[in-house]
Length: 315
Image 1 (cartoon, rainbow, N blue to C red):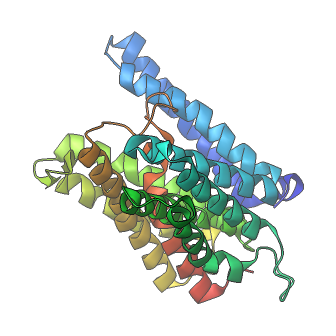
Image 2: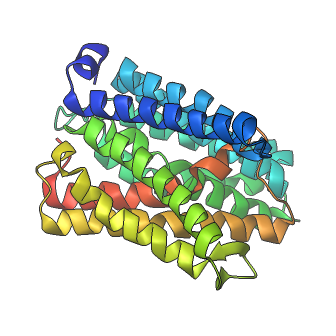
């Protein structure tokens, strides 16, 4: 991955054109509804403005190359963990929170440095073993501080923060080392966001039966099945971006996004519902916090990563 490779990559140029086209069409539709028909599209406009910020940032990081992409996803993981820590109260314990941040930074470093034994980009063995070392580093913190009161909760929150919002999400960063990095990363980013949009749209149009009323009352079975159907079709439509995928990989890619993306969304909804909050933050206009935007990717990234590695390896 590099600027020169991006400009010569049909896959990168395709997704760049697709993103620009979608943003232009969406902006035209929203503008027509607002100024042509006089509709109230305030929320849609805010969400659209959020995409005008996010899309260039993501594409810019991938365009700049492997190192920029890994740093970008590592920073996202840190800010996502920060939102979780603030929402749950973990942020008040700077020792635990600092341990989580160090673990995430270690994941970024493992994604960047070469494996000394294999001379391959990204130290896969260290990256996979990191949860053991990070948890082993978190557990002694109460011992060193000679504290016991409230430490079980702090430890549990810190481990969830690191494993879920840090290490699992950082599988995206490690994918920047793959031979087909543009294909994998751009497909995941596009497919997961499309899955979210289709679930919302079909739910609004056809939704009658709540999917999980006590977790996310607005989500419906109709919206969920609509998103799954589109996610299963999408890999076939985009097959030219990863021609080495066979039938089983295409089916699995669709299932991972269609099912995993919705589970990731619902997992964050469980946390927010338990905490009694609507959004995890307010960093992105019209979208809420960073975790509200990457929740599906967190769940999907490691599943897709290991599917690819099992069938094709990364390099």
